[in-house]
Image (cartoon, rainbow, N blue to C red; front, side, top):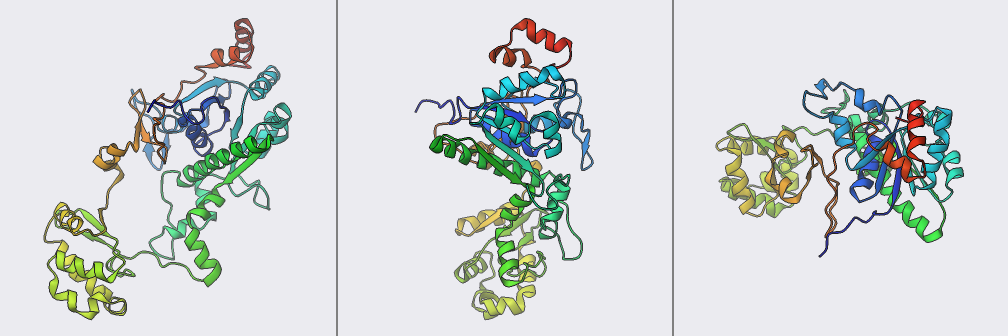
Length: 401
């Protein structure tokens, strides 16, 4: 099968985004073959370029790329354009006229100031798909609240969903709500493109951190809304089921069991050398483990401590049971399963980041690294009709960079 140019080949995207949420939405489109043009403020660039630390970690090292910029902007072209400059407005409009999609996650007030709000963009190109990522939604009393990852996770209940108890919230690092809502925005853009193809009309698509995190917590929300209950925080010493739990092995490594049926419980006990327990109703019935779960945990933990994690993983996997090592992320960049499936994408400059979260038969995503600031200003502006002399003049006045 011939290699595909990508399902979005021929689609042009104007990317007016910052930080993580918006850039990742546009990156997914670029991964699928779209021509994504990142518009950055002349002389400054995306704010993420200047962020030095995140959760106490240095984001940039000598002879290395910036973590946020390199991970969230691959396969794009970049131009510098000061949308507050009078001479930049017609350039931006000309760019929009050539585009199929406009992506942003800027605040609505900032978009209005820049002439990049929905009405202005659609006035330039009525057939465009206008896509915006937000924090807490498009309407309601909190719609205009400034929002980033912390606020989105806090408002959505996610901090308590991931907490170790019901008293203190947990803040998982990694801009998770930005990543998820950016992914959902890209998903919505694909649906909007299909709708435009069907109707011939431009579309508007939005996704917020709140909306996306509620989707991630679908079962949690349904439980709370319909039954007035919440799932209890996970406690490995007193789990709902000792057969859906984590255990520390003799070498300090961890394994996780995911066994939901009685037959699996019996098989496990026989497999790990606890055959005597496999006929004891306290250990193999729902009522039994509800009343004696802590005792089951202790017996399993004592047993798993007698050998290393690799041994138990091999034994339990060969029995056809659901088991996994409890990995740390620093192990996964070189993990055989990750590499075999291409889940860690390596750009042509060697930078490694998560690949797009699905695979298409016969298609390999491009591998261009995130662009240098303003690297493609001349090329893009000449493509949309400006002469080289006009581009140079725009750069002289700092309308472009």
